[in-house]
Length: 295
Image 1 (cartoon, rainbow, N blue to C red):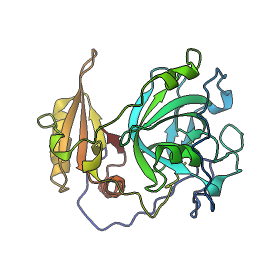
Image 2: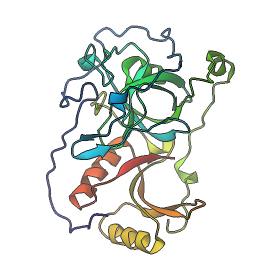
Image 3: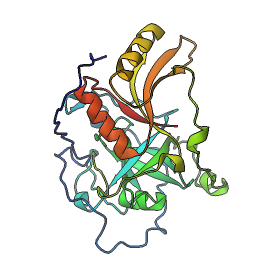
Image 4: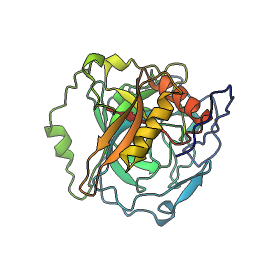
């Protein structure tokens, strides 16, 4: 864990990459000028596809090395989704295919390419199935970048981001009837007052004008800033960090057969923007590794 330094006024310039083709992020991405009705666009239909060897190699973006998964089996994660649209329409994806913002596709940093996932909007219960054929997003805290149509069907276009759960699909056993026969889950908003803690405890920003999300209207949002196998080290880091920032810092244990892990988290945070600002602030203090967690 990086050593925390004293507070100071530091200006950081964040450089992010585009998921499409790995080019430098370009401002000005947007929805189509005359948005069509995408409600009739079907979800991606999972089918067995062999992972492309070129996309299984580890790679470096902004000085960080990423190691693609050998298999997507069992992958399930909650976090922040963003989307990319008109600016990248027609460009090459990491698989060499052409990005089509009207197709049900997505970008992910480490899932095998191609692969299929079910994405659930945790605030309204909407579900979609997309084909992952690109790398990204490399913007801090985002776990998946959705195509315009996919984001539209989840109703996150206006805010630019959304709190989601991503679940890998086994194409070999998947049936298109599985999703149709299953009732759509109605997810009740989690009020701030009921969020409790244990004691002590690519690259695209979507519609950049409006990413707000009220923490009282859905799952709670945190920044995870460290993971330790030693509770003494976790407590020390937590105390050191708590003395530097006003936000709540707590430990969230993860109990495993091989021994517990102690995750240090900050929050809950008001919205996506707040989590990103906090990540930047922590970076100026020497905490270079942090990521958003939705629970």
